[in-house]
Image (cartoon, rainbow, N blue to C red; front, side, top):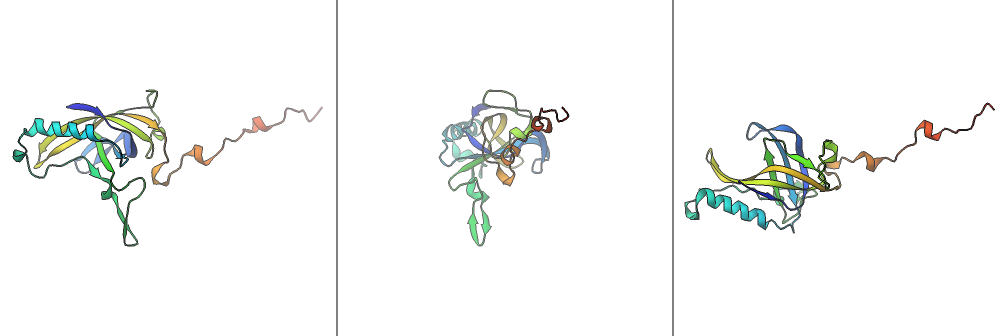
Length: 189
């Protein structure tokens, strides 16, 4: 297995602090969706994926299994019909790629300073991150292809939360406590 870092991506559907059931595999997994800007250079990821396929199935592509599955999903697949038109919900964009990254083992999540992030509210849908991923080719149960498993994650910056949920620090201002607002004047002098 080769390990490689992704380019920066927008985080969606983060389940990195607590495993959730994957209905397709029937296993508890940690996961996230990595949404890449349409201009992101995914060449290094594609090259290691190609190498994993060659290592698994050989150099003669005519002998490879038919219908190989790829982890590189087009963001257009997320389009929804609104008033008879296909519309991409933010932050998806035409020409962009996303990856579903999973692992049975919990990934470590750190901030820009490599401090471990413990509070799930600090790593949320909409923030930006990079991930170290392991590439592997597979042939199991009639399905063959290549995929990436999630290893570790580094949050690189905040972003607008996805899904309409706002952060408390964006909704409120700090309010002085009663003690801070009370006067130090003695009214009974």
